[in-house]
Image 1 (cartoon, helix red, strand yellow):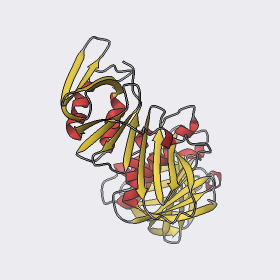
Image 2 (cartoon, one colour):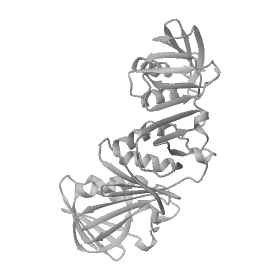
Image 3 (cartoon, helix red, strand yellow):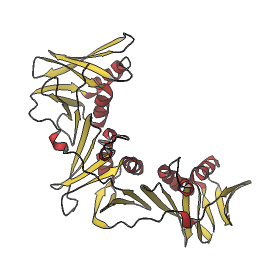
Length: 366
């Protein structure tokens, strides 16, 4: 195998693919890229057996072939080379020599045959969606995913296709984030699938805020996204997601309307003196203001006050300040509404007027 390519043309795809390569691997070959040179196309693949990313780039190929090379070492070498240089790679035996100018780097390879074969996605549905819409769905919910929870089905994001709507849902048991996209996607039947946490994070990295269409293929055990010259595949979590609609508070008769930016900044300041472990803040709403109070074991205290519009007399309730801030960051409106029943029930946070996303935060006993 032998090919030549400009530094920038190689750096972009390998920087993208290296994200799926785990640093700690049970199989040595999983720390490598699969590099294949055929015709005029160079393809680079990375996988951790759960998610896989394949991307291709056109280049000058003098001799076809394929091999696997250490992913992070190759990325570091190419990144450190000067801009605009040309790179030549030659495979001889079990060594790949990467040359540029006066520099030569010889990397150990492993046979391409050792690289895990790509699973065929048994496609049930294929549809197209605007890239910006898919990115919005992920950005507004992914932060609420659990991380290494024993309830394995929470360690991912639910894609819920229902009533000509696609909803993304994430929860870690303490908070819930839901975002709806009402669009005729052409999905034939109602279905739910859970994409694992790592797959969601890689998807978020891949997507940008453009109106181009990307293709999503749903399989029985996989989901596949095709964008330009990249193909992303992720296994699905085999489990049943909780009935999230039952968690969203209904009949909330106490509403607190706030300026989102002022509320966010006051929370950020108060959080400095909150308990580092529990991150609790006490909210006291009365009259036309909301008081934010934070304490820590060192007997330090922060008190902030922001203007608020209330439709009731008063309430005092505790929350994890991080969960509130995550929800407020996801909402894009200038003002927000906190909807409550009482001091012991969960709070629904929405944009005012209501937007596509809803955020539920459980109260904290302080």
